[in-house]
Length: 165
Image (cartoon, rainbow, N blue to C red; front, side):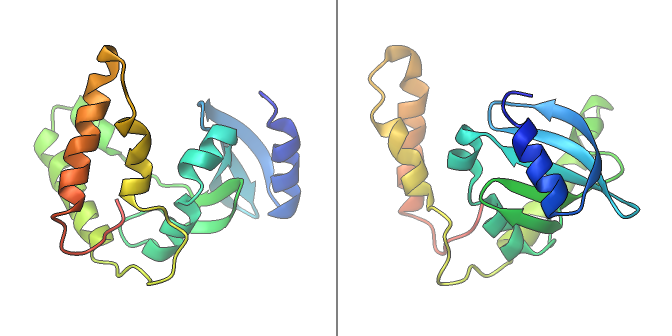
């Protein structure tokens, strides 16, 4: 499991989980369906890249507190334990040619998460920090990333309040 076996055992013990079933492995994480008591949950164990790219996600989910986002059960710097969401997802609506429904749901979610006040002190990197690697792009094939940096930089200077994306 690409080095996650040890981490999987750690989190199974730490959070009293059982019956791990690997759902997907990506460059940033290994995602398992697990059981705790009678509850089905999702365990997301970060790779090194995931810790860099998604390390603040536990803090973000904690701030949102289930308001428009999945409920965070537990987290640390290496993993998230999440509620398992049932029912159709946005991809389902898209596949069923129900783009209007998918868009309406997406807009409702964005409104909910943007309604949450961000604490003055938090460990979440701001977007300008995340965009910095795009600024350095000198390769013609990666020009869209440089353009994305420039657009993002302009948008950051026009925002009225900071929100979590």
